[in-house]
Image (tube, rainbow, N blue to C red; front, side, top):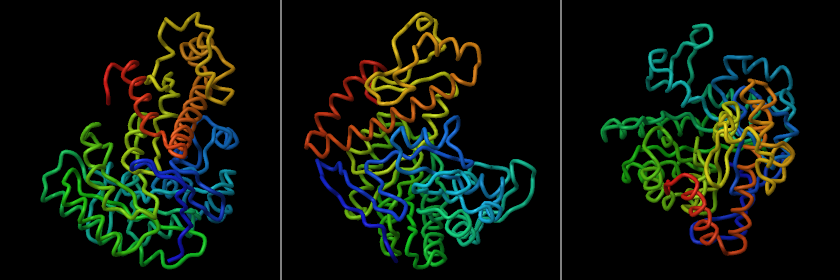
Length: 376
């Protein structure tokens, strides 16, 4: 199986910084992937996403297969051409979305039969179909195996059965993917909060052989401390020489603590979702521009972040836009939030390279606790 070269430039404790080299450009790690669910990072132009510092975007198999349709995206030149993004794209398998459909889906060994939340049409998502959509139709640079996301809380027997199904689906995904020169496939570790299941899952995925390894089944209600505990018992079982991706996480504090535990890649809808709800992120946590305290605050969001959205607009103006329901407020705040997240991972890369990540981590935790009143 052809792998994108992954070069680790520096290690500080368990934290790593390096470069994943793809045919469409280099991904600097630790990396944050803005989420482009429906072939768009909400409220941002592709050029703004690039200017914010993003090397790679995430696209969503479930949403794109339903609308506009994966075959249509293929006819229109593939996902990169369709959305005018020439850098790398990672697509999720659709597993999390169909898992969250509850009454609209039926799970079996074959895959997941489900009804569209848009029009009620019936679909079948198998490991093979997921790979076809991601790699062949959308043209993703990095595809994910189809897995079953384990809910929280989850009894151990149920977690074990779910994890074992994901292992079998991983083998089928790998076989369907085959050998590709310019595309990669990542496996997904499951096992809920049970250390032995996480180890068993990781070992089975390594035996199957993937280009990278994701940690799934977190950010589903288990809480900050338990998430950290699961990473503590999972990342030591993952290969040192391949990228490690924590799916769907999260807040800035989550990224810092996950990097401290050896994670290289992240994605989350939080930056743009928060932006649409009047919220801006910082090292001190989120702050809400709807609040009256910003009505005459002429300071910018964050002059230290190299982004027009962060530097050039006053909090008073953004307070006005948000309170008035103007689209521009969501656009500026979303742009700032994406730029802030990219700035955060850039600062982590620099601190690891300089051998001072632990100092950076402690300084960040102090600011976070000052702003939020808690460590996690």
